[in-house]
Image (tube, rainbow, N blue to C red; front, side):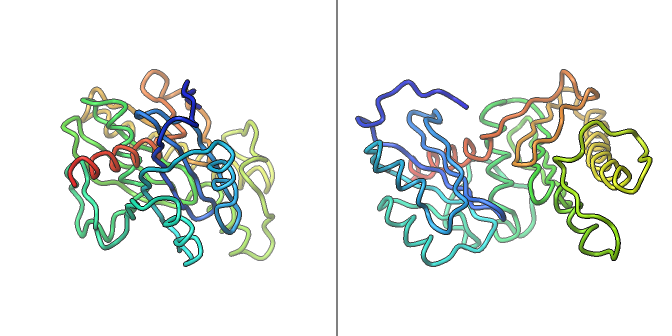
Length: 262
């Protein structure tokens, strides 16, 4: 969490909104710094509106990324926060500060993926970046040192894999990643086999991409983000970092670029 040493009651703020499959995330920005981040699992924007009222924040611009359905109620509430709202949607009514090597953009490229990529590029310019966003899905995307989004892959996230095993079988137990702990390479019982299979599967999936791309890009930096906090892998020591606000920082960069180029 970044500390913004400012009196929020005296400054206009920008707001980044990331509506995912399981939760809504918000970050208030001033001068490029995150002053406050919130997670709101309620149907509306109760926590965010409460914070705005309590701290007397004036929201100047809003940018919204959504990978889930947004109800009319939530849309109206967001539109009510500021007269200047940028919706990153399939209509593509926004501009990106980086070229995208991806077919059918913008309709087929998740806005959370491009935001994470741009957030990584803002933080680590001039590096070849492998961006790992672990949430409902596990996305693995490459950003070149020239600042180009080169594409990437999508697979089920940790909890999605565990849930699928439980729901698609008759007798296997319902488990969560929080139960994993320290796991052997090979499970000694059914519970261990499921957890080790999923957790190690995700690990070696990531390590495989990192190893192959490292051979091509010597300066490759692996940047982790996402709600499913994957463990630190010893194999990536010295070539990986974590930033839980990566998507938010990318959204802020996209917002600034669009405001500047209006």
